[in-house]
Image (cartoon, rainbow, N blue to C red; front, side, top):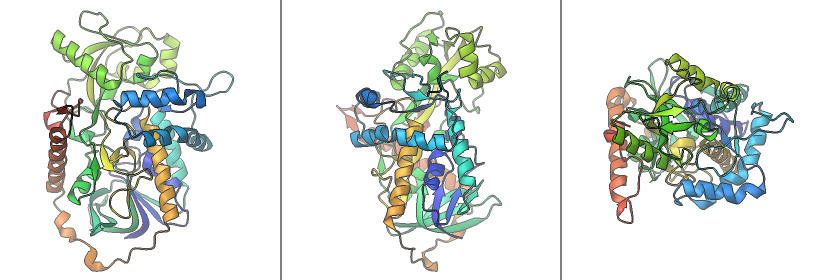
Length: 449
């Protein structure tokens, strides 16, 4: 199979990139599961936006403070300054953000934000954005979308990417040769016992990058979300209780029913406070109280959370719910420049797979959707401008596809590659004599996360 541009992943970054690529190019998008099984669909709270220039300095500082000032400041500036352009695109695609009575956009606030600057659609903002992007992509005649198709490896000629080896929905191992490849394959949550991510997101992009010597960045920077609904079932995907509920007034209590922390601290600081309280109380969770939010606002702004908690046996309008920290977001990834280009020729990376340094050591709430969209569009722009000539591919450049038939062995190999590299990064990279990651070093030791 041959294509002009291969996009690996169907989350918001991959879809938005496809929408901005040259319509004369043949584009193939593959996705490991069903097209709606990406973490982009799970994002609850919202998406940040620069409302006007008066908020720029505060937004910039909030992002840096949350990231412990390890952010790439140029990336932060690009993200913030591009936000209004992205919102215009989303509105043109029909994205339905909450509005005030006068028709203006509504904004909410989350932890570590100094002001309300987050657009939202109830508590399913990611689904609203991503399904509208998907609807637009499905209208494009130059795009083919293949579901249940897994990337097994990249096809490389020295330091040039020539496509990928994939396993198709019918179980065949095939080569897709491409003039340009975009990795948009999500994070690493599937490696953890407790994670808000879909289980099939196992860091495949990171694994193939390690395998082929593609530069990485900050891969031990792994964010834990402080509040997910506690479940005794170890195989359950952790259900996220959005930071927005704390922004709107939800409180956290220890087992004595007393408040023990400022709920709007940055995620890493709040996570540590919750862990300390759990250790002090000798419990597996703390309690979150949503009853301080006006009932009508609770039901209209957070219907998905209310419904999920009800299914789990909790009435959030009458009682507290048990919450526990869980792995949530991968700030590190494949090193990219400001146009999302990797260290390998003809290879780009966008979304959670990539790392341009915008988040620093800890992501500010609701910057993930924005960052993914901003730099996906920049990747598309760079690909369009580059005027890539077709790869002069020859059959002897293709790998032996029989080597990929044992996919279970390959998955185990990739898992070990990622875990080893995360542990190595956590041990070797230090700040002031201490490991630079303050969140979690490795999924190997994430049993209780």
